[in-house]
Length: 421
Ligand code: GDP
Ligand code: MN
Image (cartoon, rainbow, N blue to C red; front, top):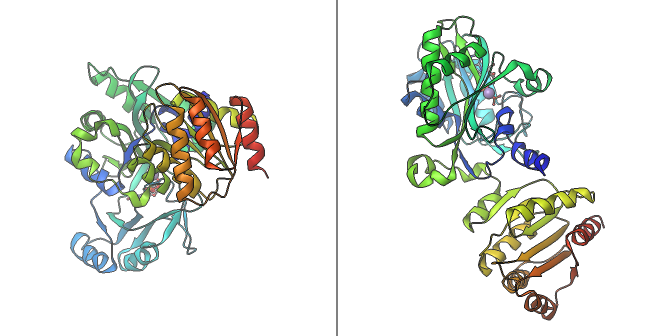
């Protein structure tokens, strides 16, 4: 199960993703928004401006970079690996360093286009904004992240003396190069902690005292903003001996939305998995995956177990979905709609162990949803527990063609078989 959880959560994340086993729901913000937040905390970031049209590009080049030879043009999508990505229009690279008179041309090839990177999936993500940044002369690229660690039940700083676009490969090949410094969440970060991190980064030219201060500021931002992830890659050194956060990814804990209203107003649904956007609206615990079996299960543990057993029988789940203990019929209808609108789904497996959740509510939800959507794939149902007889009767009387299963194993086997037809 652990392996699957890891896979689930790290599917769109990089190195620090492996430490984020619990992070199912989060807010992700754009690079330019993160840079603005970091600069408020006194963290060094390149000077930059985000623009969404060619007119704005022209204006920004004139006003923000009047005396510069070169500008960095960066596609803004909520996924990493942009540097090595490719646009569906054939244009290579989501990050370009170009002469100032070429900025418009380059931005024109990015704006409104779809960028595919190893974190976006093959469908890619639309670039609605480009971030124009001052070109810094980087003498060294390092990796830095703060996340929440389950083992120490607190923040963990991860650092590596080598960073940039190939950190994932590096982390796999040379895991010893990555250092981890757990922070006592009650004490906060000490000078010793920060120094340990800086030693792990091993900057070549940056001032040590300044670097320690930068690490402490990053930790302060992480805590005060209710981050679940702050990942800077590269954390770079400039020829003027400074550390600079050249590219950062920031995620925030959804449970803190009530006290981080300004940040949560930055949510950009155009960058999210549309299935997850719909699920969030219906208040469902849903994570989209790439498999062919749509799952509707109650309880996170049973949902994980169901996904594992599907795998065991040679199938792959299209999603994680926990309809929860007291889902309404309306939520069940929404959940079923999300599953059936997913073109990759070749079979649906409903696995309900009724406790607080009643089987008849689930059954009514499925029947009502089936009235509204064209059901093109087989549905395997396993119901057990509270009001199971009523639930089974509702399904039977609906006239829907369903495949019934006796237990979890039987259900998974039947779903895998149905999906492969
Ligand atoms: P990512 O591919 O999505 O992680 O995008 P990044 O923003 O990290 O950009 C990719 C690479 O572009 C970085 O690793 C740097 O090597 C390079 N890069 C980004 N900004 C600058 C800059 O200001 N100066 C220089 N020399 N390189 C930069
Ligand atoms: Mn990067």
